Image (cartoon, rainbow, N blue to C red; front, side, top):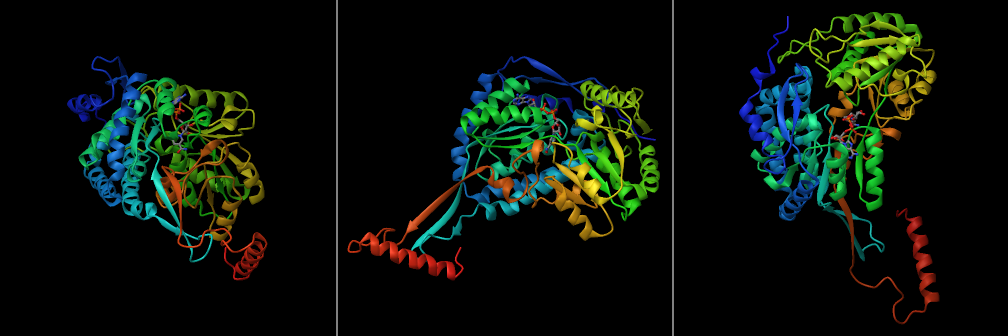
Length: 522
Ligand code: NAD
């Protein structure tokens, strides 16, 4: 029995008013009602920014950035370290708001809290080292000193989606801050409250207020204005929007990391530990009701183990507890919106209409809340069905039998996407060998998504239609910098000495180039 409580019982209205006041918007700005997915009731009225407000946000952020970039990197990192501590201290309040705003299960909300702590710890501990200037090989050994340095981009535009309102709000901002940037951030209109809470925590940790500006409004208009002004863009969202943003930035020669959609495959090889694989598949397919970019939507199972795997997997799916509980009593929450529910319904109905079979689930659950849907497993899904060809981004997975590892790899790679994949086997070398053959920016062996995502030293991102650039790791910090090459010539210009002819100089240079190659100098 889940202890269901109403959103009103957990959300502090006064806090919401204080938070919404911090959106960069005029005093009597138009407001947009955001909705609590658990009930469909209005959660808050969020002020809407105009394009002039976006321009003002960039001006304020730019002023603050000059001062911030001049602070020692260790000082910037210390503030981010305090974000780690505050987020863990406030985990219950944060999880309440994340659940209220996104309608997800408590465990999924806590996963966001833990992820932000991991991100903050990594960025604060590693940022200074990553950003330290490095010696590189100079043109003339001993005579040319070559230094690689990193300069902040300036004001970064962060445009984030609704599905992980905490982690996708703050985790891409922290590395921008440690690298000396300011941020103008446009969260999805249904995820503004959590972003504002994350910002208030960062300010409490010591981040100057002007450094993180939050604007709110329509994607193409307000997101478009952010993209127009930014010195670099960190975008997370759909592939369609990513393409539009890349085209606009291309005209201005401004860089971006684009973290986009997926159609992720899980491969269960014939020697997999089926209990472990089935248990992990539940999380990999249905965490956050499948509204997770790394979520598995295609299960390729070796024909030899298909039956015993399905028995274990379906049993676990059927025992999942759905509900709107602000505690850990439910495994899965609601979908985010009517649009999400409509998409899931369209994919299920289309597949079933074209001959696919529902192995479990298949129904909306209006008895639990307006947008709940059962975790659903389909068999017999074929190309030409929506569930085969498009990202569902919901609690829907299709199972396909495969005759060999080769067939599994071929089918897994048969998609324009390449975000995350999962391989299950008892032979770890075989698992890594299969992983290397997958066209996927991320591969988890014997995990669904959290081993790679949680390894914050690993660069994470997509291949193909799943995006450009990487978050996490060194790359996730350095994307927010321009590399600068400084070469210092200590003595002797790189030209013939006054008394030497070019003939002699070219012979001498040729001889020394040959010597350096013989010595193995790069
Ligand atoms: P979306 O592209 O519609 O919106 C994402 C954000 O972009 C929102 O803030 C939106 O307001 C804004 N936006 C929309 N149009 C814009 C435009 N023309 N210019 C600038 N900004 C614009 O995506 P969504 O449907 O909200 O999110 C779900 C998608 O995000 C899925 O495809 C999912 O796979 C993907 N996603 C990817 C990752 C990842 O790390 N790769 C993580 C989470 C979600």
